[in-house]
Each structure stands twice: as C-alpha cells, then as structure tokens.
Image (cartoon, rainbow, N blue to C red; front, side, top):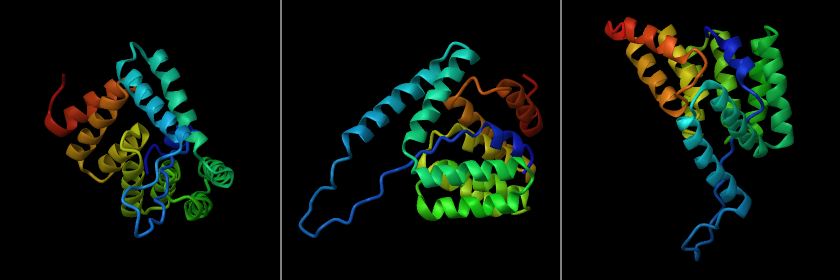
Amino acid sequence: MRRCSVLAALLLAALPVQAQPSQAQPSQAQPSPAPRGAEARAAELDRLFAALRDAPDEAGAALVERRIQALWAQKASPVAALLLRRGQRNLAGGAPDEAVEDLDAALSLQTDYADAWLLRAQALGAVGEPAAAARDIQQALRIEPRHFMALEALSQLQEDRGDLTGALRSYEAALAIHPHLRGGQQRLRELRRRAIGDDT
C-alpha cells in the first residue's frame, strides 16, 4: 500500500478496545453495566473528538490527537501492545511478512483492538493483499468509527485501486472528524480535482 510506511510511523501505540460482551444468564434482562473507568474514558473521548473537530489550528489539533491516542492506549493489554510495537518496527524496517505475523498474534489475543487491525491492513497492503487490507480497515472502523487514521488509510487504498470517488468520500469523512490532518486540504483538493474535476 502506498504511503504505508508513513501511516505506520504516525500510528502510535494507541490501542482502542471495546469491551467484550459478557455471557448473559437466561434470567438476565439487561447487560452488565460498563465499569466506571470505561464510562469515564468514553465520555472523555466524546469531549476530545468535539475538541478535535473545533480546534483552531494544526498545533491545537495535534495536542488533542495525542490525548485521544493516549486514551486508546490505556485499553490495550500489555502483550497486545508489545506485539503492535514489534509489528510497527517490522513494517518500518521493511519486513511486512513478519509484521503480519506479529499482528496476527496481537489480534488472536485482542480482537477488539482497532490499531492492530489498521496496522495489519498496512502490512497486508505491503505484501500485495489489498482486498484483505480493505477488510482489516473496515474492521478497525467497526470498532472505532471515528478512527481518522483508518479513514485516511482507506482513502489511500481506494485511490491505489482506482476508486477516486470512494477515496474522496473516505477522506472527507476523515477531515470531518479531524479537520487539521497534516496535508489534509492539499490532498482533498487533489482528490476533488481527480475525482470530479473540481479545482477549488
């Protein structure tokens, strides 16, 4: 996948996780409530995504982005986080096959780990499996629909496959969440020019 190494370098150890559903007993009418810490993190993420959308400039947005990634990282298991970092190193070091193995292992431990799905998508793209990469990106977005880096990666994959309209739509969705993505307006203009002939 083109720009794979750039996206992998930007992807920190931000490990969003959804709580696994508990095995409900037949007599239970309602699911167990989420832990208070999880509720607090979810509420803070909502506030941070609002701040990210409304940030006045790129510097302010970068601070909010780092806090979002830190909150995602709090949910990771130590072993899954270690495997993600090893996968990042292998991908950046030109060993995407090894990165796929690392991320397979991470996902076998924690399937609700959006960044592992995203990074494995990038590794799969690097080994020439774009369809599998697209499936992994979609899974990352099912876990965290506001994952602007996953939307950015999806846009790049769609562009690489010749789907300029899809690439534009995905990138517009990323910018709706994070209007100050680095190089965002330039890329948006280029996609609009190529997809719909709009030079504005």
